[in-house]
Image (cartoon, rainbow, N blue to C red; front, side):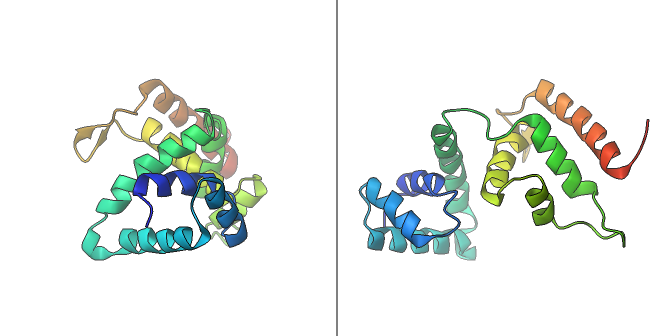
Length: 167
């Protein structure tokens, strides 16, 4: 099984393969990992992250590595603008169908031309920056008060738009 750091890098590079093994194998091969080794590593790391006995330790170690690999693959740029993130976030939170039921998030993503892997990347990027200044009682070093305020304003505006509220 390849190291977790290498797995995170390859997983970030494979974010848009939609599970197509032939594409995954090609990317793995470009980085010196055989198809068999990739398959075994993917199965092994997925099982470890899903194992209740692991208590989320592997997933917690994986996420910062994966997010750093995503940022590297993007050249450090934002995966989506804060405006886009707030618009889609508000639609997911407030859109209802004619019967008053929550609209499925995949429909919201599709209507906004956003693939699910990219949305997950946007969430992983923006949530720590605009969500909360502490995480489990510890300071959140990624929190940006100015961006958080802007996000709240955008969410208010977009929430009003989605709900048809005129202020």
